[in-house]
Image (cartoon, rainbow, N blue to C red):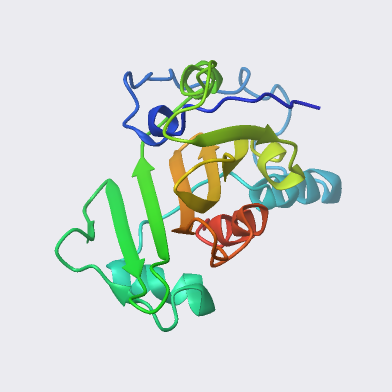
Length: 202
């Protein structure tokens, strides 16, 4: 079980500092038997099981409207902030707001290849940042591809309530952030927003 409290949310959401290029790895030498023989049922099953293993890959939505479709009811009744909401080839930053209660929903993503050391480097340690704490949580879905899952929560005394979740995968970062003015109710419990983050995986 990995549980670490790391509150530097702005650092984790920020761009990855170094891209590590991984050398390809090939299999063993040539088969000394019949090169034309077919795979055994056990080999075929193992190959199919490997293909079904989660990889943490994701494709950025075509635009923020498409991202909103994944978020569903969380953004229903909220207005997309078109001036600052964009999705490019390797980054996404979309924000929806509500004039009625002042709440905000954000979707942030960065496409970046990371190995384990690269993901670990993205996880800072230290005190709170901007009134948010970030806790690394155990999640079997993230463990399946050696990812990192986090839940962010607004600290007591913050001008907002809410937080959100962040997922680091070998292929980048995905995050859903929710906030509302202090004294009101956040659009969704931060821990529940992690399920929405996983909906963006391929």
